[in-house]
Length: 265
Ligand SMILES: C[S@@+](CC[C@H](N)C(=O)[O-])C[C@H]1O[C@@H](n2cnc3c(N)ncnc32)[C@H](O)[C@@H]1O
Image 1 (cartoon, rainbow, N blue to C red):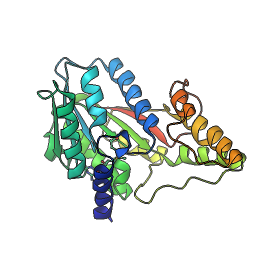
Image 2 (spheres, protein in one colour):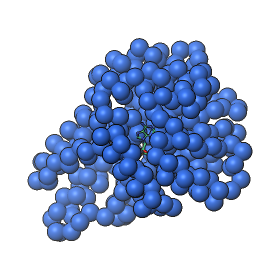
Image 3 (cartoon, protein in one colour):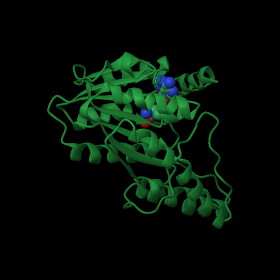
């Protein structure tokens, strides 16, 4: 199965090279994720020269945006899909001027230390990548190893999917007469209580934030109901998506949450 998941991502990278759709069809969600990460990172007050790694970085879009925003930090992106890393390298060259501070390599989330070394990072991130590990055991083992990659006082930011938000979104959809959105075959979602319990063993504080609930409510409930009513297919580039990224946080209707986990200093 894991080979099948890697093949899927390699194929997506090949088919969507140079486009925001390499890692999800929802291009405005990616913009919202990057904007939210920038907001959180600004408040972390990382040291000058901070080292940041994006684990399961896909086509490198997130890192390239962050590198532009934070010109003093160093970035490493790794992914187990070589085609994703090839795309990221092309985008890095195209971006120009970031070469000394940004690197992309192939690497496996099951062994992040092999890519970053032990105790080297001020900040580690995963973005919808840990959900590709197929069991709770593999996911929490990866999180324990991510903690090893961090310096004392370092931070792990997880943008990952949770059943609770998926269920709340589907309950709201049902109220509007819409079909449930199923979890895709290559994803294994977290449960928030277990996530908190497991991460507490490696981090001194864990805070889970809703950053995309209003966006999901607007796009997966209201806009979906409007499309259903009009008999048209939803368009991920519709103005409602474009506008919804600016909605203030509200509710718990998104499968995707941002967890800020801090290693004791
Ligand atoms: C949904 S995409 C997200 C990519 C990127 N983080 C983003 O936010 O756009 C998931 C990525 O995780 C990568 N991935 C999945 N399992 C992995 C593993 N075991 N090791 C490294 N990368 C992995 C996939 O190749 C894919 O690029």
